Image (cartoon, rainbow, N blue to C red; front, side):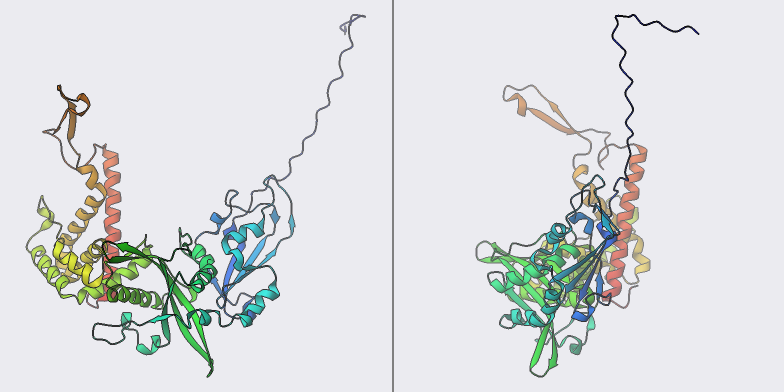
Length: 468
């Protein structure tokens, strides 16, 4: 086989480069904090280091970690955190098999946990254990000299929601702390981690703003005749707004019953006390900032019970129910909303401090309770709810349905010269949509109606034995 001859004066050919072998290490996929962190609420030091405490379920631990909401650089990572229900300090036990940078770095766990727990996180376990004795009376020291509130009914007797016996709540106290008091800010800074962990979308309040008020729900516990300890069951943070000319409004911004004491009536008890504060101090109204679904259920159940005993509201409900029973609403082209009059809305606000938006939520349940037998009138009732939901969702769009704007010649300002008219063949009801869009919208509306009917039935069952 012939070979290609190289010219004697030509430069020698360069040697071929050797290919570098590239090795790929395992890329660190990270671990979700929700999968490797456990949090316990403990009331005594013997529970630390065990799983005997009350395990709490945070809203979302992942959101506290910046890098893709994951933890990187650890193999076999386990984090166990204990929070004292006595002093509200915390201690974290962190164990792992090894660490290595797999391309995403190594997460600074201390810094990440401090974003949640702040100064309440203690590094030394022994220091944490000592707080169970050194700060045994932390809550008692805060509430001892503060204003204690009583829940009073109109007849002057102490009352409790859901028929709870007086004995069951006889050891409860609700104490109000003004945020201008340093003790209030100090206590709130201790419970902020629980707010962040357990209240979805929450942010700490500004403890330097004196318009904030803190309401503590505590239970007295007597170990010895001379030693009464206060246990914190829950708390609420309210903001007092000025209302011209000489009034005020209260807004409930945060409310939390600690996990071990939830679903035992304490939340309803606290709502009752707050409502009585609003009434006794004659504020304009008591509102709630972005209530979560479960709290809204508790709040509405409480307000419906009050409205059932409020004559102006009941008189209006009876009139609306009587009108509703007169015919088949589903067959009518124009279905009335059966709303309470402005006069009744105002009386409810002035007397019970329930604002209009909340009253209308309760109104639908009062109508449901007034329809007896409900089975006979259920179709008409669903029609009312369906129309209300449509108005809430589509109301703004329907106002411009079928309308068109055209410019017209004018000797005045051309930019402001126009005519608006409704097309003769147009139909009110919203923006033109194709068949699939219309079907999807109808399904979504029906789902909202079904969810509302379910909620109405649950509250009706809770406040009355007649409806299930």
